[in-house]
Each structure stands twice: as C-alpha cells, then as structure tokens.
Image (cartoon, rainbow, N blue to C red):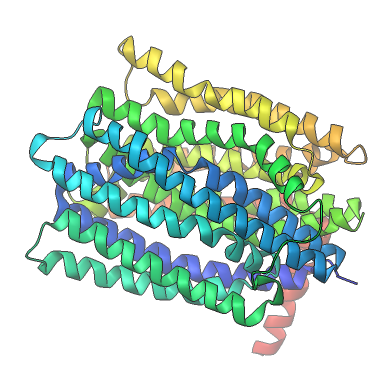
Length: 511
C-alpha cells in the first residue's frame, strides 16, 4: 500500500529544490545581465515577445501537464502499477498528438502574426523569424517531455531536478560566453544555443525515467477509461489555462502593441526576478503537491488539510523573505544588476512580486481541487475572470493608461479568483474546513506582512537617499521582522516547539 510522504521527506525534497534554486537563481541573474548587455534592449525585447507569441499557443501543454501530473500521482497513491503504466502511456500518446498539432498551428497562424502584426524593426525581422522557428522546435520537445517530468515529481525524486538543473545552469553560463565571442548574429546564436541546451536537458530527464520508472516505457493502451478521464480533466482545464496564457503572454503582446519591444524588455527583466524569487516558494509547493493528491486518493482529508495549511504558510514566508526588500529597493538592485535597465523595470518588479506572494498563499486550494478531479467550476469561473484581464487592459491602455495597468487589473481580479477557489474546494470536498484554512493560513500571514512592511518602512525613511547602508538595513529589518512574526504569529505551537528543540539539540552538539 502506498504511503503519504512524511514531513521529513517533504523537508528533504524542499531542501534539495532550494539548493537547486539558489544556484540557478544566481546564474539566471548573472546571465540575464550579460544577455541584455550583449543583445541590447531591442533584440532582448524581440526575444521576449517572440517567446510570448509561441507561449500563446502552448496553454494546451499546461492543461495536459496538470492532468498528467494529477492522474499519475493519484494512481501512485492507489498503488495500482498496471493502471499507472497505462496512464503514463495514454498521457504520452496524447502529448505526442498535441505536439504535432501545435507545430502546425504555430507554423501557420503564429507565423502570420509574426510576419504581419509583430512590432519589430524592419532590419531585425529576419532574426525574429529565425528565433520564432527555433522556439517552435523547442515547444515540440517540451510538450512531449511533460509525462516524464510528471513522473519524477509524482515519485518525489526531487534530487534529480536539483542535479540536472545545476547542469543546465552551467550550460547557460557557457551560452553567455559563446554569444559574447560569436561572430554571427548574436540574437540568432543565442536562440540556437538555448534550443540545443533545452533538448539536451530533456533527453537526460527521459533517460533517467526510462531507467528508474517501469511505467515510463511506452506500451499499447488496452484498459478502457484511461484516456477519457485525462481528456475530460484537460478539457475543463483548457479554458482556465487559455485564460492564464492570455493574462500573461497576451498582456505582453498588448504592451508591445502600445509601447514597443523596449517595454517587453522591462517586463521580461521584472519577470526574471519574479520567477527567481517565486521559484523559492514553488520548491516547497512542488514538494508538497504530490502528498496532497495522495492524501486525497487515500481518503485522508485531515492530512490533506494539514499539508495545504503548511504549504500556504511556508510559501508565504519563503516568498516574503526575498520579495520584501524589493518593495523598497527595487531601483537600487536593478540599477546595480543591469547597469542600464529599461524604463519601468524597477516598477514592474515589486508589483509583480507582490502579486506572486498573494497567489502562492492560495495555490494549495487549486491543488486540492485538482486532487478531487472535479475542476469544471473552477476552470470556467476562474478562466472567465482571468480572461477579463486582456480586454480590460486593452481598453485602459487605449484610453491612455500607463504600462502598469495590467498589473493593477490582475490585483483586482485576484480577489474574485480566491473566492471562487474557496467555493469550489468546499463544493467538491465537503469535509474541507475552509474557515480553518482561512484562520490558520491566510490571516496570520497577512498580519505578519503588515507588520513587516510597516516596520521596514520606518527604517527605510531614516535614510535620506539610496545607499548600501540603507539596503542592508532594509534587508536586515525584513529578515528579522519576518522571522519574529512567523515564529509567533504564522507558525503553530507544535512547529515552534519543534524549532526550539532543534535549536537546543544543535547547541548541545556544539558544546
């Protein structure tokens, strides 16, 4: 019989993912600076917006990815090996078909948009087309990679992600050196090398899965009722993922339409920082999602609730620890990082990070809904809400709004998304105590955030202008204040007691 992962296993997986993230984050921050300096703002913006066009058509991948991960993890929880093997094969077959369909659409409708609608300088149009075709090839491989990645996560082999991600980061450092010395078009060279690294890393993942997981060997799907649930789940999730794509990639295209590629470069740089910081929380969420699904599949709703509450708390603390200083010192950090950053980068960064903090606190609700398999209501309602970001943004920018408008719209609509998620969880899992989740996860985190921001603001105002002393003081204040409020407000009594005992044991060893 399968077992729900212990807190020790979850902690171990989280630490592995954190080590991976810290290294890759440092590499990402450095490589982004080199790439921007080497390519220039225009070419860097072109790379971001072309990737956005490709991303507009890959929401299907995200849809099937969620379905694949859910069903593979669910079958692992039930400990049905034959059903698990059939589920993987069905998922891989569906992804192969999807990959072929996406390539057809991208090389017709997507290419037409690049040729006729994309706001790119005439002398860089050829390079933009080459980058686009290379991005399409990358999508072909990444879509068929989804079932393998889902298997690694479902088996909770997070060390694999850690080690291979370090290799990927090293290869990206090599790419930076290569484009600096390359005598060829640097934008095309960069896109080609990224494609080569992407394909190589995905092949390593696949070889690992084939050697370690029996279900990852493709077989004929013979059991009835395997593909239909996956497609049904994916079908309802389709609108939600399409809307998320529109919220992110669609907004990038709209910004390009009104402000040109330079603003895409600013959004891209803010996104780099946001993704790096957000990845710190996603490490814990990635480690805890499979146990949530397994707990539901085994009927242990109480354990599922405990995992959800812990996920919300820890993701808040992890994100806030690194995001809080950016709320006050984003301009100082970005100027230091990029030297000549694009306009609006220092504004987009803290706003985007704030949104990530709020979203991460409620992601466990989505995991519970996915675990139940009943996602119709959530997908339709949340999809409609997020899709509204696009027309609202377009109308407001058309009326003369500033580039910050899309972020403001996202904040406003997030409230309705959260309400929808609470309702959906309670509807699908009647045993779920939404009041308990709200009291133990959300309210303590919000109180902590208010205190952290208020105390840090007071320290920030003590300095007349930007300086190393100010940023160090801000970082120290946010760290200490967050640590104190988390210990006494966010974490439960048993966590505080466990932490105290751990410190005592460490001090005893030291003496």
